[in-house]
Image (cartoon, rainbow, N blue to C red; front, top):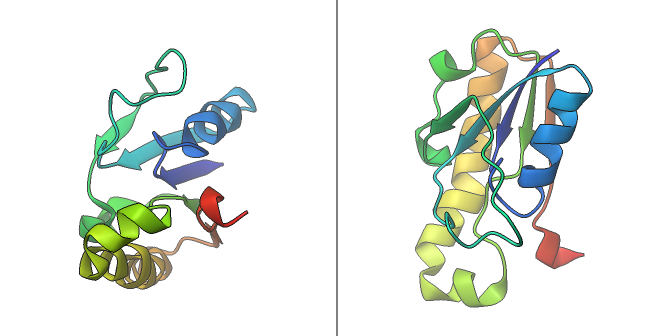
Length: 119
């Protein structure tokens, strides 16, 4: 299955994307790399990756994918409080836009995971 993983360089995505790939899926990561260099332990590069802000992902970027796993977000209250408008734009508005783009691109599966700080 061809899978797009947003936030593939984040806390969950950095484990999920390689795991999906190891299971035989064709995985492409989409990440802004806001937290590049802040990895827990050794950084594991994952390719192919597209350096993109989730707010900029469009229908054409998702054509040919069978699934989207959406993990990209600004997580935790302190980060969200720095600029609440950015948090709404990235975590809320961009998620809706991404889901619509996926539907328009013919993606059949859309998995949305909340921030791990909500657990």
